Image (cartoon, rainbow, N blue to C red; front, top):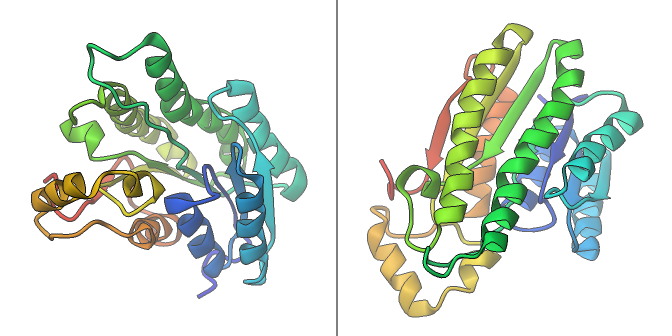
Length: 247
C-alpha cells in the first residue's frame, strides 16, 4: 500500500524497539523516513538500510533529544534535505526507575527533559513547516503509566502524563491548519526495556493484563500508521494499545 507515497516522516528513538517498527511500517506504506538515534549508530544505520530496501528514502540522524537545540536541529536537517515534513512521531524515551524516597534531581530531570522536553522542542520546530504546508500529522508516544501511575516511576509517569496534556492542547491550537495531534498509549510491550525485567516479575505483570500477554512493537506501530494514513478526522485523542491493562 502506497497511501503515504510522497510524504516525509520523522521518527525519534527509532534505532530499536517500537520506534524501529514504526519507521519500517511508515516506509512500507510509501513514506520517506528520517530516523533519530542517540548513541546506537550501527543500529540506526541498519534501520535506514532496511527502509531504503523498501524503495523509499531514509536518513539516520544522531541527536540527544534531551537537549532542545539538538531536537530542533533534527527537524531542520530533515527539512533542509527533503523540503517538507508531513509526519512527526515522538517516540524517544528513557526510564530512571526509583521510588520517590530514592529519586534524585538528575533522575527527574533526565527523564522529563528526554521524554517531555523533546516533544515540546520537536513540535515547536516542525509546526513552522506544517502550518506553511497546511498539513501535518503529529503522533506522540505516551504510556498507560501516564494515565494510571506505576510504583517507582513518578518521573516517567509525570513525563508521559504531560505528553497527553500537551497533545490535547496542541490539537486544539493546530486544528485550523489541518494538523492533527494525537497520542498512542502502549501498555507493557515486548521491547529491550521489558526484557531486562526478571522472569518472576514478568509473570506478575502478565497476570495484570486481561489479554494475558505483552504487546508487540508492531502492534503499536500499526496504530501509529493508522493515524498517519487514515486519521484525517481524529485529533486530540489518546489511543490505548495495552491489552486491557488500563481501561
